[in-house]
Amino acid sequence: MPPMRIEIVPDDATLASRAADAICEAVRQKPDAALGLPTGHTPILTYRELQLRQDAGEISFARATAWAIDEFADATRTTPGTNTVFYREHLRLNLGALHVPNPGAAGPTEHIRAFADALRRAGGLDLCVLGIGRNGHVAFNEPGSPVDAPARVVNLKAVSRAAHAATFGSLGRVPHRGMTLGMADILEARKILVLAHGAHKATVVAAAIEGPQTADIPASWLQVHDDVTWIIDDAAASALTRNAKQPRG
Ligand code: PGA
Image 1: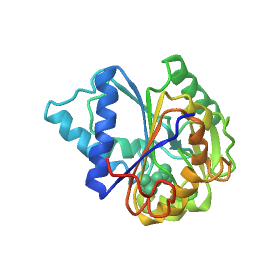
Image 2: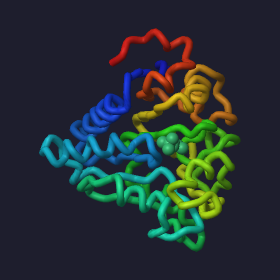
Image 3: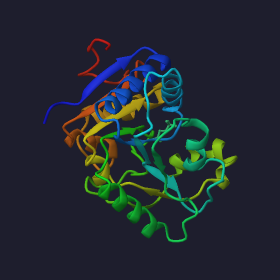
Image 4: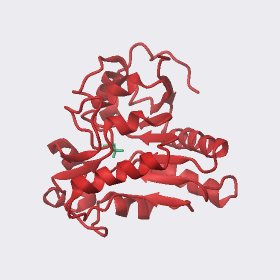
């Protein structure tokens, strides 16, 4: 297995620009690429950068499709804080299609299974972009998720709910359940790009990259994939030991 590539960048703007480079490259190579796209604070500047490049005519996403990697359950399509609302606000790209699970689905288990089946039938993800939660989650694969975890409904950990309190308006409004592509679905992507910034991610980034493969840190399962690139800022890279001396890309 080739080692994961680690690119350490000095600041948010460089992170966004390098991540946008990688996403644009995937779409240039395959204009109808299927992209898994995360939500959260981390990718917001990247999406803005993609929008700028699109609006400048440097790239077209018109044939590309985007797939959400997770969504809250027990909400509606207009509930502030849901990923549906996030994409509407932050992902201003003219995409061929954007597929997001319905946070108001009456049967979330069947709904997310059907969503993952539709993704598989469409050919799977060419590039899956991910963030990493403080507790090592990727999408809503919370600690305890095995490497072959399927798409499913999960009970969100307290730390994950707390991270979303502001966008939902209060902790009490954050749903207790989420729907997620499984580790298995994510690891089927042909390429994976993980983004992390900030000192609060340093410990978990080091565990995911340099620690053992374990369900305790679901992001550590990315080590089994043969085409993973991490783009992380200096602060998020500060607890790395083996990779600390790599030059910046
Ligand atoms: P963040 O979320 O980008 O808001 O830190 C990352 C995640 O939980 O996947």
